[in-house]
Amino acid sequence: LPEPNRPLSGATRGGNQAEHSRPLPTLLSVAVDPPPPPPTTTMGCLLALTDDLIADILIRLPSPADLARASASCGPLRRVVTSPRFLRRVRSLHAPPPLGVYVPDAAAGFFPALPPNPAARPARALALAADFSFAFLPAPARAWLVRDRRDGRFLLDRAAPAGSTAFTEVAVCDPLSRRCLLLPPIPDALAASVDNPYLQRGGDDGGLQSRSNEIFLASRGNDDRGEELPFAVIWMACCRGKLVAFSFCSGSREWSALSPPVHHALSMRRVMGVRLGQRNHAHGCFYWMITLTRRWLVLDTRKMEFSILDISPVLAGRSMMFSNQITTLESGEGRTTVVVSDLFRADKRCVLYFYSFMHFSDRWQLLNKITLPEEWGDRFRGIIGAFEGCLYIKLDHPKQNLGDPVEQNVTYFWFDLKTMQVGRFTEISSATVNEAYLYTGFPPSLSLPSV
Image 1 (cartoon, rainbow, N blue to C red):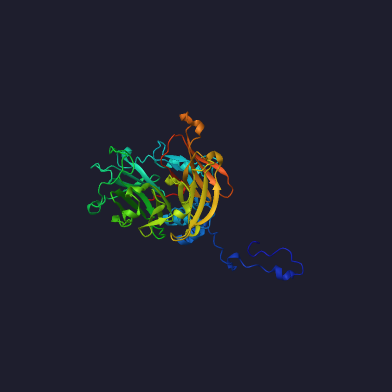
Image 2 (image 1 turned 135 degrees about the vertical axis):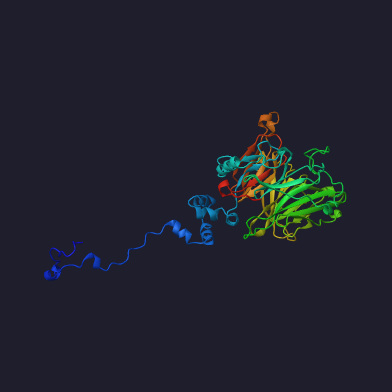
């Protein structure tokens, strides 16, 4: 602008020289619009949004990795992403991939997924961040036995001071946050119904490994309003002529009695026909194969009710010697898929039959029949889980390695049911693996304490 009171030099084309020679008003007298506000920052925009609106935006990100990057950008986003309520919404949309295999009897405990599996990197992070030795439990840590795992939680117990192999001290813990919850003992009024239970695991010497009970974890819904995902602990024991069961709810922190079926419905001979440690699970229901029969014992944890399911039509003509020949898997829309492994064939091959049902009373539909690779015939030891159309299968070492203890490894493979592709998931350098759990969850950056 020209200096105050100084005329403009020259005239515009077609303009009046006299008009432009008039002095201009001073700058102080010029009417000027107020200056525009400064640019709004990202933080300012976030502060104007509620946590619910931010959550509705973030839940549309395509992958958990994108959520991890978003949570690292600023405090408000991290507060929303790391809330238990939001993480449960994420899990309902993005099923947590398997990160490895947990073997209670092995010294290492957790065996992460191996490259080139996409889960190898977060699996290594989990192995470094979590304490799978459970040293944070009340001492001595070696006295605790891992009994089950579900939803990132682990269930352990140890012999009570009185030396009972049935009524043990029970703890639910999270190895990632190193938090634990010690359950109260079963009340005497309930414990009185347990009479000389049969051993379920360990020897007859009553040592630290002996147990006359079977305990396991069960989910109790997916309440989006609560801060913690509720859970239940089921306690079961086989006594002479009867089956006894109790449940502990994390909400009420109390034990209650369940009503199993009468013993004559469980077995042709005695209640020992139920191997409690060998169970399957799908959509809130647990299944046990009843020995010497073609029936299942079923516990629906949504109603906390037992029932008997006859599965003889689908097992006709097949030799069923082991409980791991039947695996239940969760399917979409609430359906349950049952995988029946036909092992004892003349051609030495392993054939998988896939059935599906919605309700117990439904007629099972045969979905597919798949013959596993020929070299797996003598090595197949069961299915430990499934994820996005892939089965995770346990294979023993090849027969040619029987004389070499170094090469007696147990290998877990993934098997894509659509493409028929096979890949190694993880490997355990051990000649014998009696029990293993497929570990699923998010990497540590997206995990919170679950106890």
